[in-house]
Image (cartoon, rainbow over all chains, first blue to last red; front, side, top):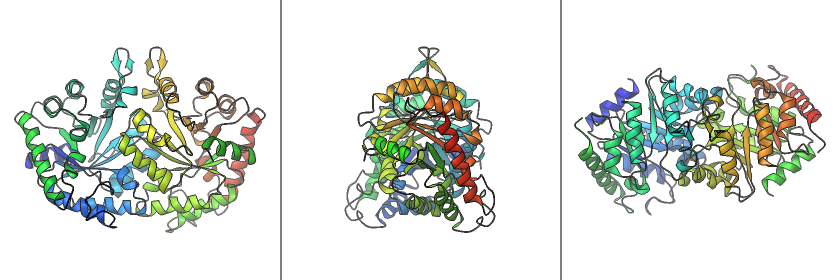
Length: 271
Length: 271
């Protein structure tokens, strides 16, 4: 199945645009799991079991797992195995390297881990992105306008009257031969989101920055989804997975995911 | 010891600006090692033993090891253990993410693997780079003007009459409080290298793209080093590690590394 189709199917089945960010920090998991060798894995299992019928997608930021050293690799594998096949998985890796090297990263994320989609960085240009795009059944979310404060440093620099992120979006769309490209646009930029949705038509947008980062849900949903209320992937990590701090963490995560799904759906136009 | 000092010491001791790129592809190693579980590690051992007195530094591109799956992590660790302590190690990871996540990547590269330096991507701005820079005893090479064809797509876009890569270099120098910053500039852009050396004073430049990528050695060395012929890190990967294709691969790599060192030194001004 192609990526857009898989994304649309689960969006409809679960009536949800919620992407649960499994950015699991071993120091932030509940007391009864902290310090255990399998603590992160048990935590992820609890979150997934509690949210698998609510989530459109799960996003694993690889940084959190790489920081665990040797065991991190297995935890990613085992976490991915727990996620139902029809739910989208995103490897948030933000990789970018010269062509022959980007191919190695694409293999690691798509062949070895088996993610449905990956995030990729644009700075190194076309040959750094194409090895990912050549996986026709996988999705590629290219960084455009990120959710963090540092997005102000370069992404807004004006080139011929247009900010850099608009050049990135315009140029990268020319690379979308396999129809599997999307962009990352932070919910912390709600006005720009609307403009970007206008530029990209119905390409998927991965929209982080709700919750802990303070993005505006209503504006992000109205601006970031298509006319049919689709193709938005709204990531919340800390706001869902750390909603509860104790043994009830999974129940609390489920409630937070349901709340976010329902809040988002209130602002979606009919799907 | 601080990073610049460590780099200068080994540059002087080995009279070398050669950075050996351990971008080991299991499909490209000699027949007698290919297909063995420990083939990549044995290959790296052979290369390191044959070049450890010639190299200023070794650069491991993480993509090649991540593409190996589960075993890749251990091979990076074991490879790093083989490298003499006074030779600089660079984790070529090109990471870039929001602040709290960038910190996880910095931990993975500096605390867990223990690299002396890492490459970092600039697109996400200051908070994505600072967690690396806060490791005062480690070096950070920020991508500026990369060696690949895709460098033409965004890095040359003009902002107020100046290309993006010059903005990146100028802005990032304001973040260099700990005096541990450097930049990545491809040898495939020899004229720009000279201009960039003028902009950055004596900051180190990691200069890939010699050899297989066709960079001009003389111009790159004259343009990329300081007036004293220092602070250049000239990476060659395929040109050294695959110089021989058979059981003599280590000897061939040694000869290629010596040739490159001597060629570079011919164009260095007195150190």
